[in-house]
Length: 97
Image 1 (cartoon, rainbow, N blue to C red):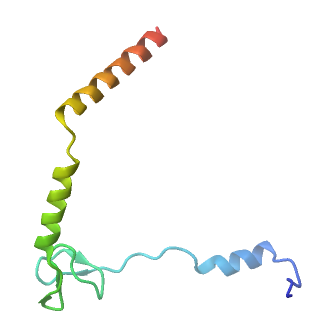
Image 2 (image 1 turned 90 degrees about the horizontal axis):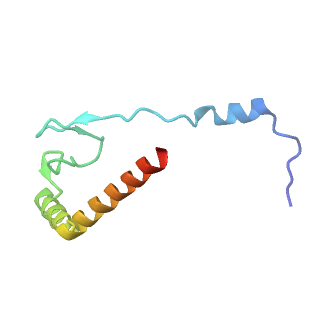
Image 3 (image 1 turned 180 degrees about the vertical axis):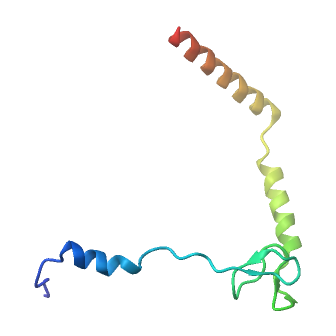
């Protein structure tokens, strides 16, 4: 079983990790919608890649709308949360006085 022969000094550690820094993202411009797009990736906005429609963005929008409608809270829940927050604020004000 191999063991380290020598202690790794702080300078060795820093030298080894010198290339770990994050690099700036390289972005191009979509030819169709002029939005920033990563190289060799389809545009997230319009779904085009190299002049062809590759991603069905209409389907994604419909899915997002469906999810947002499903997650909307019932009005009674909203009122209950507001009342609870109001009670909490009054308690905090009373404890400070």
